Length: 274
Ligand code: NAP
Image (cartoon, rainbow, N blue to C red; front, side, top):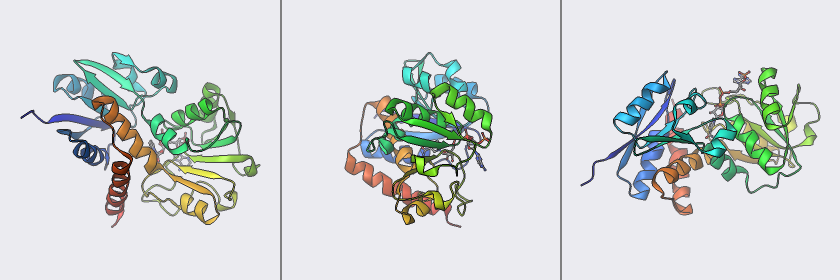
C-alpha cells in the first residue's frame, strides 16, 4: 500500500484554520490517500524547507505569506504574478511552483453576473482585494475602492486601474456590486456590518468574502433589502477544490461540491457555537 501523502497549510497566526478538514474531506471524496497538516510559521522560508525535505506535495499559503512566498519559488504562474500573490505551492520533483486559486473562487462566485461597464466597489485594500480587483479588471468593470487607510486603496487602484473613494455613502446608487474584503462582520464580531443597510437594495449584488459566519450581518441585511447576496463560503470552497485540481488533476462533481458546502456550513456553525 502507498504511504499517505502529506500536504500542508501555513500562515501566522494560523488559528482555527478549516483547510485541513476541508482538504481532508475533498481527498476522501476523490479517493486520494492524503492528509493536510497545519504548519503555523512566522518565517515562510522554514516551511518551504520542510516542504522540500519531507516532502510535502501541496502547501496552502495564507496571511501574511502570500506575497513573500513568491520570492522563494522556482516558478510562479503568470496570473499569480499579475495578482501579486500566491496561495498555493505545488512540489513537483523538488521544484516549487506557485499559483493563485483565490481567483478561481472569486470567478465561481461572480461569473454568473455581467459586470462589464458596471460600477463595482471593493471595501478593503488588503491581500484578498488584489485578486478581486484583478477579476473585475478582467471583466471590464469600473473599479472603485474604499479603505480605512486611504493610501493602500490608492496603491491598489493605481496597480489595477480604478478610483479611490473617500466616502462609501456618496452616490451609493452607482454601484452594481459591493464587495466586502475586510474582516468587519467576521466571527466573533458578527453583529456589525461594513455597509450601512440603507445602501442595500434590489438592484445590487453583495459579495461578502467572509465565510465565518456563512451568513454575515451584511448578507442578511442585503437579503432583507432584496439584494442578491453571495457568501465567501463559495469562494473558500472553490479555491480549495482548485488547489486539489492543480496538485492532483482530480475534480469534484457538482453534486459532491454541494455536499461539501453543507459539510462546511455545519463545520463553521459547530466551531462558532459557544
Ligand atoms: P488583510 O490583508 O489583512 O486586509 C484587511 C483589509 O481590511 C485591509 O484593507 C484593512 O484596512 C481592512 N480592515 C481591517 N480591519 C478593519 C476594520 N475594523 N474596519 C475597516 N477596515 C478594516 O486581509 P485579507 O487577506 O485581505 O482578508 C480580508 C477578509 O477576507 C478576511 O475577513 C478574510 O476572512 C476574508 N477572506 C476570505 C477568503 C475566502 O476564501 N472567502 C479568502 C481570503 C480572505 P487597512 O488597510 O486600513 O488596515
